[in-house]
Image 1: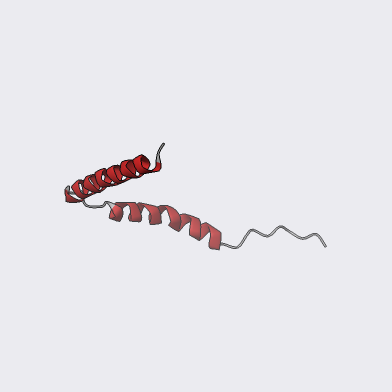
Image 2: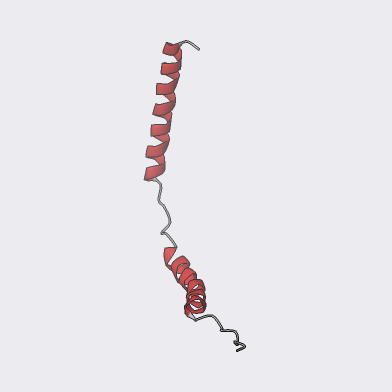
Length: 63
């Protein structure tokens, strides 16, 4: 493809993407639901941390 044609196509595509991005930015977005995800994540992590903090069971030594 000729470089000038390629450059024109690039500029046209970039302008199209900028228009789409501007239109997307104007859309109302729902509030993030991170609060529930955070609580659920920590609820799952806490038991694992408790298990990891317990010392391993020691085996009986034979003298």
